[in-house]
Amino acid sequence: MAGRMIRPELRDSLRRHSEAIVSAAVAVLGVWIATRGGWFWGVLGAGLAGVGAVLALGAVRRSFFHRDVASPGLVEVVEGAVRYWGTDSMGGEMALSDLSEIRLIDLRGHAHWRLRGAGPEALLVPVDAQGAEALADAFARLPGIDMGVLAQAMRVSDAPRLAVLWRRPHHGAGNRPPTP
Image 1 (cartoon, rainbow, N blue to C red):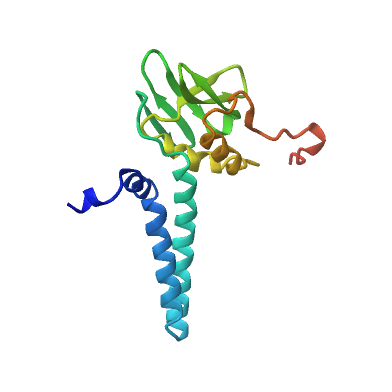
Image 2 (image 1 turned 120 degrees about the vertical axis):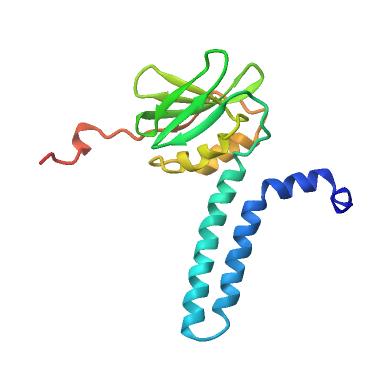
């Protein structure tokens, strides 16, 4: 009965952001505990608030990447590598350390991440494949990435999807640290 009283779009939004809401509640609980007085409660509450804030940041970051599963296949991020187990001869693996470029492209009417390696190889990963939200945490570890740019690209559905969203910074020979 209670599920029918909530508008479907509100219910979907709450479900999508539930991790962020719970994490924020943990942070607020930590602040409340910290204000109870005494150094013990202050330290305990501050620690809990910090953990809640970090978890909320990750949850918000992942919420932009969350889509209802509409494409076949499975995305995994394991041991520093992105793996996409797809169908129709799509799929593969790419180490994050080999990743040189990220684009968001349209392919057959569906948005795909185009992950390009140092060589000519590229991995296409549908944004709406099962497990694709794990890419948010993987991408966040890349040097010089602006997660806001990726989130904006995901929000704008009619934007041209040819622009490079991230490119690995190159270090010229003069910028390399000396070898021992």
